[in-house]
Amino acid sequence: MTLDELRELFLRRQSCRAFTGAPVPRAVLEEICSAALLAPSACNAQPWKLVAVTGDRIGSVAPCVQGMGMNKFASDAGALVAVCAGKSNASAKAGGKMVGTDFTANDLGILTAHLVLAAEAAGVQSCILGWRSRKKLCAALGLPEKTEIPVIVALGYAPEGYELRPKKRKSLEETLTVL
Figure 1 (spheres, rainbow, N blue to C red):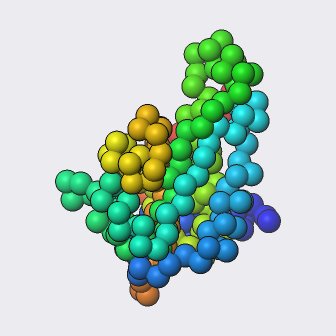
Figure 2: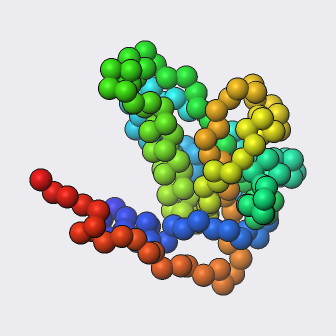
Figure 3: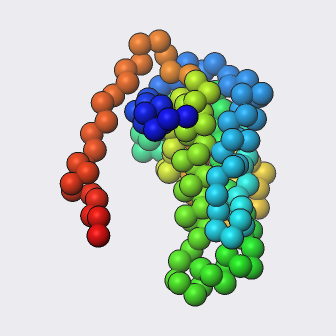
């Protein structure tokens, strides 16, 4: 893949807030997640678990990421993927303490970026959802109540004519310092 092709992928990927309700086929979902799991992590700790929700189960999980008018479209997603914090390894924990950084949070962010880009490459749109009720979500997913779930990713297919929005980003001059 060239840098131009990668840039095109970045330009195509956007937060989709309208889905057709068509399911994401299990094989496609597994390919997306498999590609995302190639994400790097501190000390190769891979401190994550993915929980994918499909079919009728979406109806019981979607309300856990909705509230105050947020994420109504999640009910029409073809799949929901919970990105859960798993156990880190001793090296990553020790290194994080030494430098005052929680590497797990960084690692989950990298995994999430890989997940949405893999989805886009597979022709599946996505939206990263931060709004959630962890307690309700853990219950709906059958996870221990204290499971950390920093994000849910809604996956699915945008309706025909769903507009690709132009990217509004700060300029390189505003954001990059080269020393």
